[in-house]
Length: 381
Ligand SMILES: Cc1ncc(COP(=O)(O)O)c(C=O)c1O
Image (cartoon, rainbow, N blue to C red; front, side, top):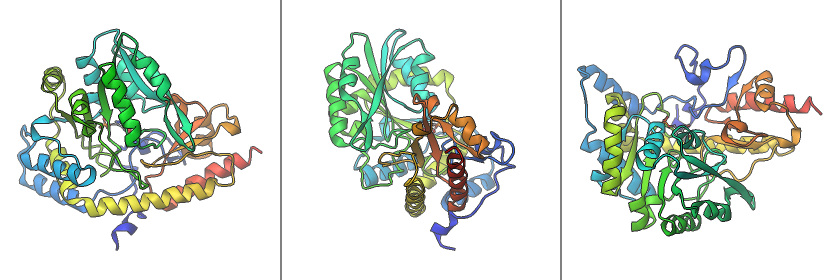
């Protein structure tokens, strides 16, 4: 069987205590949380099997070879070589977002977040008594991006302390261009703001756009940025729990680590093994995945072409951001669940009237889901 066709395989996850598949009862296809219905690459399964067979599962530190494999990946894909000394290994990325806000800002500081956005970027300030300015994403041509005027307006407030970026942006599927990143950096530098850059979706670019790590822009950017990345979305290993931060600024890294040590456990040893195998040996699988996802994206575009569903340019992620406002649905989530598809409601990210559809699944499943969505919408008119 060719690698690409492995993605067509239908995998029964009903017995796996999967968050995605456990959410709905009855005949609802779950297309919500960012977790793909694909098997993991063989290199990950082999590495895990070997480590499990060795036995002895004591406290384990992140190896040099793991860091080397990440550096190799970042160098090859982003022309960026983070220094080994700047890594912080984490059991997940969400805890790092919350930790960064708590460790590196004070109560009542203002945090700037382009939005609609993955809800932990707004929850992190909200749950820690910070002020939150959501900066609207607007359509520029046919692509969502941040409104830089509103962005600067918020950043120059006296209590502004930190920017939380999501790049590629989820939801909205935008990959920030170099020009946009430089403009954001210019503002961050002018008003002396820290930048927490969640780049978890950076390996999932589906167009010719190039991902640029914010910290790689220039020396100043690298000194004011905490970069957060993970193999979990790309290689579908979110359940193992591994992410990493790159923090070049020694003082920031020390403050982050001080806050981390008492509260956040080290990553699970199997997660470390999986991450190393993924970054070192997963390239062929990764490229096949991207091809398959591009096919799924094309399929969605074709299916919605003659409907009132709108989708802007989709540059990255397997999460389609669909504007269904023209249908005037009272409750889009319940409407589509009733139709048999469990989507994420845009309201949860800060954009009512939108839905986010996870297309990290077999074409057959996607086809079934799209049929249900379109039949339900047609039956309204
Ligand atoms: C932008 C973004 N950040 C973080 C996460 C979750 O990270 P983790 O599972 O490592 O906590 C997600 C998951 O969907 C995400 O989309």
